[in-house]
Image (cartoon, rainbow, N blue to C red; front, side):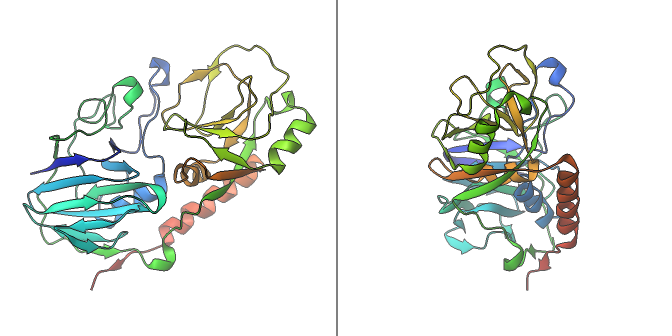
Amino acid sequence: MSLLVEQPGILSLIQDYGRFGYHNLGLTTGGPLDVHAFKWANRLVHNQLRASAIEISIGGLNLKAQGDIYIAVTGANMPLTIDGRECDLWTSHRVHSGQCIALGYASEGCRSYLAVARGLLIEPSFGSTATVMRERIGGLHGTKLAQGDVLPCADTHNLERLTLPLNNRPVYPSHARLRMVPGYQYSAFTQLKKSLFFSSKYQLTDRSDRMGMRLQGPNIASSIRQMLSEGICQGAIQVPADGQPIVLLNDRQTIGGYPKLGSVMAIDCACLAQLRPGDWVRFKAVSIHESHNINSVAALAFTRQHPLPVK
């Protein structure tokens, strides 16, 4: 059983939860940019939360089912049809063999996730199916989906259909407030630069991608002119010599030599990933203890949000 890619869309990638433990080999994490929507897509088709799914950026993906399956699409407001019939997002649907699954273009948000019951049956590379195009690793052949690709999956019958209630679904505005934990190079930035950074809007540029979101706004260059390369975490706010910050994301390089103000919380990186070029962000500093509390509350909220059976 499989899904045949008839149109790959703008950028469609196979992703599981990510590739961990290989930074010593220079392999980055990969995985879904919006982990919240990714987990819900899998949860709605009764999968393990780390199961392989498809991340669709902007839209335009068309698939043909070659077997009876169940799917769910979450994330950006991207119109979903099955054989021309409009279907709800954040809801699981039965798809019969020969039917076509089509995703339009997002009107709100940027990235959607399509999960198939029992997951896509892709052979992992270095412990993960996450596609990182820069490293040519993961997915079917280390790059984005192409017309004619065949995605193996399992034939599934009589699965309980689920939906996430409307009031529990996220909305995707054209701006975000990003909480960041200051890092140990925070003191290399003057108080004036830090005040400017936290009081200003920064706009996403069209040079943003899965490696990092490049921002444009007031110059906040630090006093550091040269430093040794060091490991980089997800969400690191790197500031090159031009003073324009870059928030590094899942496909970031594993080491870098630019000063960093701190790191955006992972939960807010997911919000950032749903923005488009021209949208804007502001930043707010939080302590490491505050970030732990925020993460704990978010994890508890996820477990307490229950999907409902589709009637």
